[in-house]
Amino acid sequence: MTNANTLFCLSALNTEYGTCIDSDRLEDWPGLFTEQCTYKITSADNHRRGYAAGVVYADSRAMLQDRVAALREANIYERQTYRHIVGMPALRPGDGILSETPFLVVRTMRDGRMDLFAAGVYLDRVREDGGKLRFAERIVVCDSSRFDTLLAIPL
Amino acid sequence: MDAPTDRIWPPGLTRIPYWVYTDPDVLTLEQKRLFEGPVWSFLCLENELADIGDYRTTFVGAMPIVVARAEDGELCAFENRCAHRGSLICLDDGGHVKDFQCVYHSWRYDLRGNLRSIAFARGVNGKGGMPTDFDMSCHGPRKLRVTTFCGMVFGTLSPDAPDFETWLGPVIIERVRRVLGNRRLEIIGRFTQALPNNWKLYFENVRDTYHASLLHLFFATFRITRLSSGGGVIVSETGEHHASATRQAMQGKDTNYQGMRSEKEEFRLVEPSVLSMHDEFHDDIQLQILSIFPGFILQQVHNALAIRQIVPRGVDATDLNWTYIGFSDDTPELRKHRLKQNNLVGPAGYVSMEDGAVGGFVQRGIAAADNELSVVEMGGSGAETQETRATEASVRGFWKAYRMHMGL
Image (cartoon, rainbow over all chains, first blue to last red; front, side, top):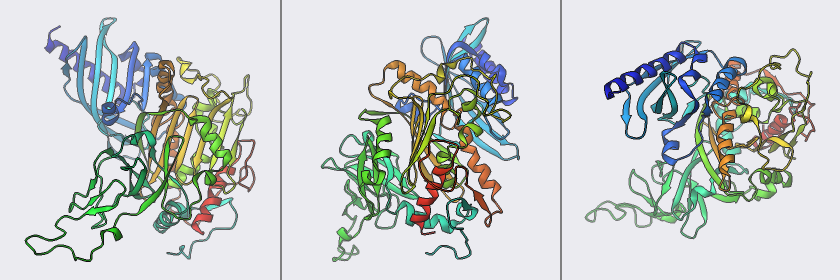
């Protein structure tokens, strides 16, 4: 794959990722990851200090499915939607397809209140799996360590 | 300042007037009487201040605080406010310094917060400068008395605060030691959750053993805790501190929750390992939530351990500072397990995300209810230790201590 082609495919994957969450197709979200994967939401400060814990931490697609099930069946939170605005991925050196992509997430609450909920970068390791690109690792590094009220829907 | 005169609070512990969550005068009074009163506030962890010159910034109520390890190795804490014009002395969360220098006019402090030098104290070219009789030793930020316990640093601004361990009492001490023991703490994550409510609504929620399995469906469905499994709540004599425990989950069909929203027996996880428990405490307690008045929480949810610090930010805003912890002797498996289990707690926790929102629901619900009262009568009217969690004894304990300290 040429770099240009890789970047195009990563952008398409990122678009699919954002659309999937923003249009409430959360059930499709775990399928964007490989079966064994890492998904973590952390902050720049935690990342820099090497603190391993995330606000969300999953090491398998099954854990992501459980998170969606919990959101649908168990957790109580006010109706809200996200709008992901995702920048162009930049390739990072290393083994496999590594990239870094900036993102913004605007949160709209049921009463119409809108906030800039999160900004940061996705640090990704992507690989081809069953004929399509999937995330083997997505570390969501938020610029801020401060989360408003709660973080229900994935970033 | 006196309590607002038009404010009525019936005697006893079973009715709470809603103005305590909305009145700015109450918040001001709380700073003086509670946070700066004869209580001990959590400041930071000892291992964040390993070397001489290490410091952290934190809060006691609204008051910004610096904690530092001084030249003689002692831990010191002082108000993060320059004695000159009141600017913050430290702007960062922490770091390593030789001394502290206010950025505004370069007044310099040693690691204990003593004022050591004043820029241009003698003026420039014989002109200006401070009066010759200005005594630097009479000027400085307010200082705290500091103590350490199980790797944590606590401080008090009040000369009347009892000795820390006397204040906690042997029962609460034993419950803290049960989790933290003599093990070396390690920070594995640090986040802040901004809560849209008065700080007391969060502290009550922590002490409310009644709500857990009703609001948090995740708990009940997976039988992590149900009020019908064993457990109970310890409330210290003054009501100030509490520890609730949930023991081994019961087996078989439980009919206590039939018909309630949280009853969904069919809901199962694809990856249930997140709920398993490594036996690190060698007892049958699966969950222990412990609070130290007025703003500290130690959480053990299976192997997910965290310290939570409450920082009021206004009548209807609170910062909840989460420090996820492990121990330096964690096996790689246990550490990994803690990371996975942290999904249960924190701002995105399966079982705690509701706690981030429910205080806001109350704050919005009581917007016009200053003269109305909330009802806290589950389990009677007292604040004593009880062998059930179907009680609000610990919430009443909080109000018992609150009213005592506040003189309300």
